[in-house]
Image 1 (tube, one colour):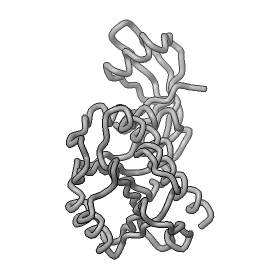
Image 2 (image 1 turned 120 degrees about the vertical axis):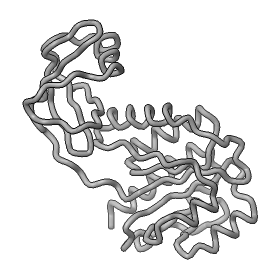
Image 3 (image 1 turned 90 degrees about the vertical axis):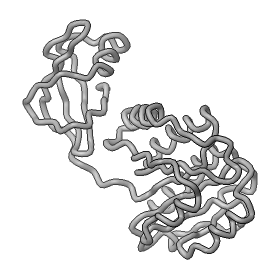
Image 4 (image 1 turned 30 degrees about the vertical axis):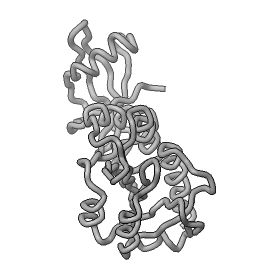
Length: 236
């Protein structure tokens, strides 16, 4: 299986190009590839095979040989997640990407202890997860938002699927139909405050649903909720 690397700029078949410093380091020092080795590059426009035509310790030039995948349609599933500590947040970013979300929205709520996100680290995690999971487009990572601003600014055509520990309602296929986009909302460790729950419930686009009778950690809740929505979507 060829190595897959994300290349955000446009690629022209049969052209050559120099690789970035990060890609050069990875190919030489981690993967230890040689001249003539093949690598796949991808972005939102598709995926191409390439061959290393020049290589030394600081410079790699490749020739883009052939387009092997066309542009694919983006997932309509987004994830709004209250910020958590670094290790579980890394897992959330990785698994949400692997499960195919198109956008990740970090949320600050009354009970979130973490108020910032390291965007460089987050983008690196979702890019590597995109490479590993055979997708073409890493999810967009939105700016950190308060819960109120998130609810106020979300597109009116988006349904908010609220993973609610206080409901027993099972999500149904009818809930997902006729929606341009779906946004899964996962609360903080300790749940939303009563006033936040009231604000969420007043939004006409919100559908509270259950993912488990157990209390789940945020990273487990993210995996369970996205998997459930993907499963239901596949039968629509």
